[in-house]
Structures are given as C-alpha cells and as structure tokens.
Length: 315
Image (cartoon, rainbow, N blue to C red; front, side, top):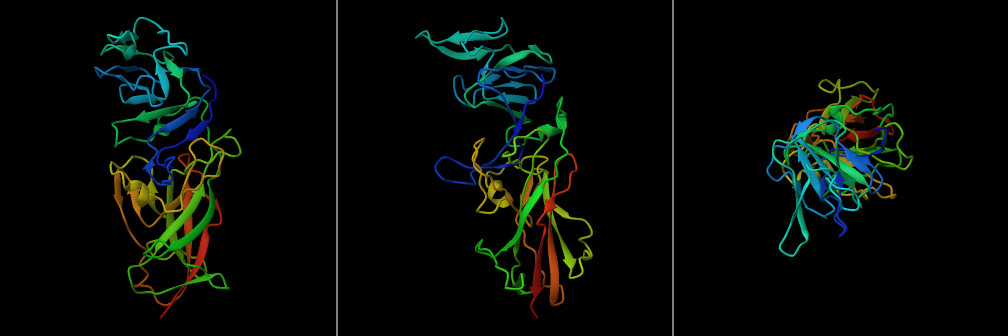
C-alpha cells in the first residue's frame, strides 16, 4: 500500500562482512520498510510446500507463496510474536519454545493478506522462482512503481589477462596489440528508480558495448550494443558473480557507502547462462577505434555519461 523505496535489484553484486566484495549475485528485488511494518501479499497465490515458512527468528526468515518468496520478516505474526490469525499455527518444542510457524498446504493467499512483519533487515526481499533460477521480479509490475531515471555510466575501461587496467597515454588513447587473447571491456554504471534517495545506487538491468570507427560510426556487427549482461534470469553457478563483475566491484548492502557496479561487458550472463569472453581485434586493420559502453534499465531508459574510450590498434 503506497510507495516503498526500491533498494536492491536482481543481479547486483553482493559481498561479505569478511572482505569478499564479489561473493554472490543478489537474487531478488528489495523493497524498503520500517522494522515491524506489516508485509502484505502482492498477488494471489497458494501455499504449495508442506514447509512453506523457514528460518524462524533468523534474519532470512521467509515464506513461499507459490513462486513468490517473501524474505526478512517474522512470518505470520506481529512484532510481538502474536499470530495474525488461525492460518498461522505456532509449533512448539518439548522445551516450550517456538520452533516454527506452520501454514497448511493448500492455504489460499489473497492480495493484501498479512504475511508477516519486517524484521531487523528493514526491507523485504522478494524472490520469484526456484532458488538458483530466479527471474526478475520487476516484471510483475508494482503499484506506484515508475522509472524515468537514465542509468549513469561513469567509466569504460580495459583489463588485461591478469585483470589489470590498461592505461591511456597522454593523448587519452589506449594502445592495443591486435594479436593475442584479446582484452576485457569493463563498463561501470549505476541506476535509480523514481523516488530513490539521492545516495541510492541500483544495478542496471542490462549492460553491453559497441565498437565504432574513429569517426564514431558503428562497425559491421556492432550497429546495436552487444547486450551480454542481462539480468532477466539468475544463472545457477555461484561463480557467475565473478563473470559478471570486475574485481574492484563492491557494495555495502543497504548502507550509505558509495557502491560500484563494474561489469565485464565482454562476458555473458543472461538467460540463466554464463560464459567468459574477450574483445579480439585481430581481424581489424591497424588504426584508431572507439569502444562505447551501454547500459539500460528495465523501463528502457538508456545510459548516459562517460561512455567511450579510444584505442589504437598497433600494426
């Protein structure tokens, strides 16, 4: 009911508190709420699992309603721990302590039904689909959701085989050998949706690149961006985070620190698949070219900003 700030999208890089900045890809759609606020069902559904609620009392406590998972809430109960109604059955252990909340299989859930209350995470993580194969929840269409904000591209760079940046000369041009394994193209970008806080950084829906001639005209085969990174569906492989993101990517989950989304645009993460790749310019004649980074959000807004880097292919 009403607007709630979007604070996380599918495919964003997530780290750990132990210093690993590329630990996993974010598998859901995060909506901010106050601790204790009631979570309401966004769609009709049916409880299809005999154990639909999990992780009682944990930060990842959640509930599965059909294909939708609502996570980071006290399932079926108020902040004080009282069940909402008879559908939410508390089960106690021999020691008298609450062990889990039971919701009978086949229970019908309707739009607006109370599902739980937000726990200490201060947001609801909405997940769509089987774990490891989640799809993007933004496709569901949310009441009050709007996005007129163009993604911001802040850097386009190149990495060698050791993930080290290739620097431009004093003329702003990067020298490249035409032979070899090729180079990795990195596009740094971030996004927002309407009514985000100014400090909020979200990940774009898709990222790609084009190769242009020195006059800025796309080469054959690059008339449109190569959208290699598209977060329409999660890949099941854990290592996909290091295929999608360059080593210096990082984010503080829901914190106030500046977040960085540095995409390896020559790799492929889309449609639930992943593959590493390089830009290999061996077939091009020596000379100067332009690499243009591209970013787009789910609403179709095109990225703006520092989109291009000049390269000179050596004989």
